[in-house]
Image (cartoon, rainbow, N blue to C red):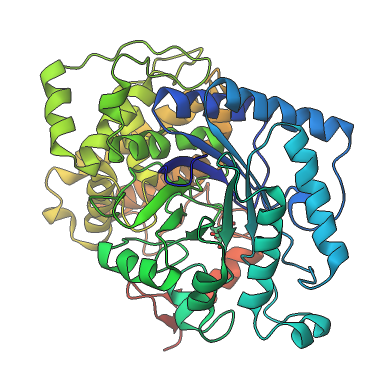
Length: 478
Ligand code: GDL
């Protein structure tokens, strides 16, 4: 990986079940088809990535990794192998450095040339022995990273090396995580060719401005590489994010040396996030003529006007990128029963979309629901019909999901969809009750019972402190 190249693609860096071999192969094919160039291996719950980082890989594990490394190499993708030793490493202990070398050595033997050391989400205190050897976290971590990079071969242009700092976003930096002057110190101490990860002002950053990145690059003495958690859902598994890649500067190459997105744990939910990343990076033109495929699935060509596509391309706006990606994704919704419509897939993806934003049809649906619930039946107008139609569509999609041939695509949404269906059916019952004044004073539903509906510890806890739109909390009795 040449040190000056812009790297783009995916980091498998979330907490949760690791992707399978088949999913990773499909990912690599997608990255390659779409002009993205990098996959970074770093699943937090792979025991040997973090908790058991000191144990070597056994034969079956090296065989699995070799398969991934070879596949990336066949497709001309950078494979980055990352290790997270920060939970209990002693930065100054030669044995610990040897263990990292031993692990990376195993990967070198498999053909890996790009490595990363990740020090995110680790205890805030160094081992007492380290405290007497290093004046700061930054010094200890830079020492380890430089040593390992040197051992791999600083003068070897093939070797790429990346580093994830302990404060890896603006909020952590402001809170002083890692100690005073941490970022400046690693900027100073880390070998200049080592790339540094950053997630933006927040762990999940709604927007990342050019100004933010430009200031950061001065402090780090290099452009950062974005570890983008916009579509990560490991922190709230009731959600999945299927919206467009957006909220990033128009010229990513100016203050960044790359962008890797760390997306949904459910691999199949990541088509639109990754595809729109490729559109955002402007790679689409470079990819003219490539089939829009995700792994093995060939796509039927959706019925769209060429001129419409061109207009969307030119618009360079996330919604246009989204619509274009969803049309491609639509081709993967193949079931054994009723056919999916494009509107089904747009509606599904709109309902999940992004952490800070819903898609157009979801906004409309939610607004309708809110007006129907809160306003008098006389003011409902067309909204009731529109809402009822959407609820019918949700029911129909429930069935179509269960009939999908790609079972993982079904499982990616099934849980959340089930809840959505329960809630929207309840709303329909409520509307019926509201319209019929003779149906009693208190609304209840024969199919929604205390205990089985919205039950469980988590729900009960969530009800104790209600969150406002501004992010503050209220107790019910205030
Ligand atoms: C994090 C973790 C990441 C996790 C993400 C979203 C980084 C560098 N580390 O803080 O593993 O998936 O948040 O929850 O982002």
